[in-house]
Length: 381
Image (cartoon, rainbow, N blue to C red; front, top):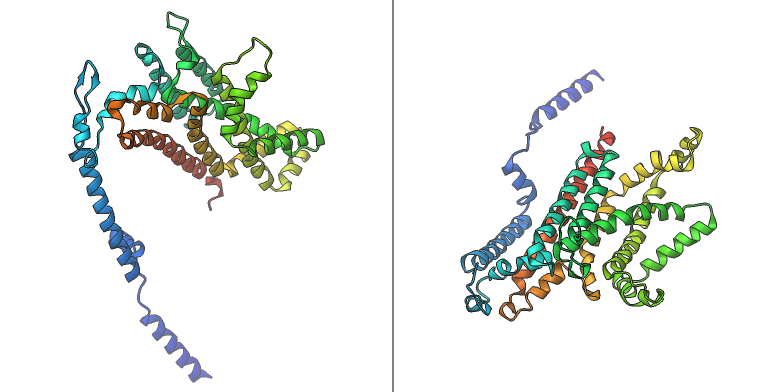
């Protein structure tokens, strides 16, 4: 037994000595080997994709920079786009952007008053930035939003403080898109919370009403609701009563957003363990205190990704208001290239509009990722 134990010890020590030391794998070269060149198939795929990407980038640079036309002369009859037509297909015509960017951003808002619409856009961006900072998450933030929305309404409508009155029929462009999306989500979110709680209510009547609302709204596309708000709703109103088209569209958008957000929030409520409710009941908390202090904060934290996904979708869905005659950012851009001088240059226009949509949507996506990481720090070990 002693000889066998000695041999086993010698064999084990030899095996341990022959084991190569573990090498640290870090740095850019190690990352490239592990992710892009870890096998011959991966290496071949990487090389092919790099070649395709290089050729595509060279074409885009040649089309969008080298051969591009940045401005054209403007005469009494309007812009002369002959230079753009001469390079069409081989070079971009960014002159359509420099000539029509104000119409794209502000629509039919009076030219001399477009500084008001610009301030509105900056106010919205400022509100988004401030609301995204944790140090401003206080009850006073609701007051800031209220004052900012009042200021936005005064700027857009005018009629006071010496400002020219501008009817809602002349609103358009990016300002209208932000108004529809922001007001829609701001009102639809609390509505969705109430509907989600109502669907889980023990009172049958309340639960049936919430279920009927969600199923009815989700069963039809948004464009149908917009048509009903624009065409059918005025027929149901008393004679002489006619609500503004923008207000009717905003109500339709709020109802649509609220139904979809309610289902997302209900999923977060169902994901919470029953012990959370039992613990709150043991502490003697009321129904509303339980939901406000314990249930809703946890449920909303669980559904941040689908919530933001819906916010991004809603922001883009506002472009459907074109069907009822409202010219948002995308609709104003389509109308801009309807001028004979700029027909055929839709690609450049859609690239410009797409960049604006991407900037807002990408910012929402990145912020949601940071917020999710921040709220889940307590779960890390």
